[in-house]
Image (cartoon, rainbow, N blue to C red):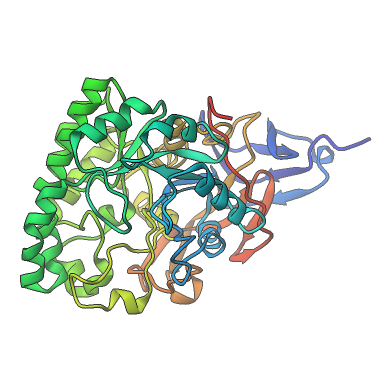
Length: 442
């Protein structure tokens, strides 16, 4: 008689929608087919996980894998290798590549590049421009499209929608939740001389100050209210934005990053220099405290890494000609588990922010929870393991992290994507990633 399950996971604590449970997980094909006390003879293969905790597969909804156009610093293969080493099972990738992802052909090109090379499941955002607004609705319905991305302020790449009229047209032309980099471009242009005159990355939060972020976020919320469209505000970094966003939960969901929760200005710029430079900037303790308060109070919906690698030589350029961005997909889980162990958030809240939250915000089908019928995406961690983040563990082609040398408690041990083990104890297996599915799309 054929076994009921292809694989059964035993002896671990499992984070289900009911909370922490000491149960078995039965996997058949690519999906979870049984939960509870499963008979020994019911499976073809058993994976025993004593002392470990099984989480729903972590979804990093904000990565830049730089392919095409910038593969000297990252590509889909190395980026997803870093992801699975860090316990991430699904990634949503941003459109500011070269060429930018703004058409059906660009999207298809990325999907083709990912085929047979991606270790995680994946989808790609399409960038909004003045020229493609009429096509956005069709584009966001295509297989493999994560949604539409708007840059209100200039960052890495050429994508930019800086005026309210165009932004309103974008929101009116779309159906799914639009994700937004909210910085006020006129203020960025006017204040750049501050960065140039200081010539040190400690000027970065002065140039791209809290008012630059707040002004853009207020403009965005006003247009979202006018159009009746919901938006997702990326990498929120200021206390002032969070106070406004907390009053507009009917219009906006909120992302914060591990680096904005972990690093503080001005110390980070003195220690790491341009290797701590990102957009929006790392800020001082007032803003960091506000981010943690928003996490505790439920204002934050998602934690995304904003993985944005550049080479060491590029980051060594004199500020402000140095590029903004740091790698982060591989360190998201260890950093946040360390915060869990430090008592800054619960493990249940971590699951909400990195699995259930992204699935809910973006309408990702079959992911985000450990439940019968869902994809067997699982992030298996050792909550007690203390580990130093070392350069030889990092898989990103850029080859560095501002968190090198940091000792964390909580470490990814096994990554399972749709029932297949793709990473176990830092050993990577086959690239089986495919495009994620979304509610209401092709």
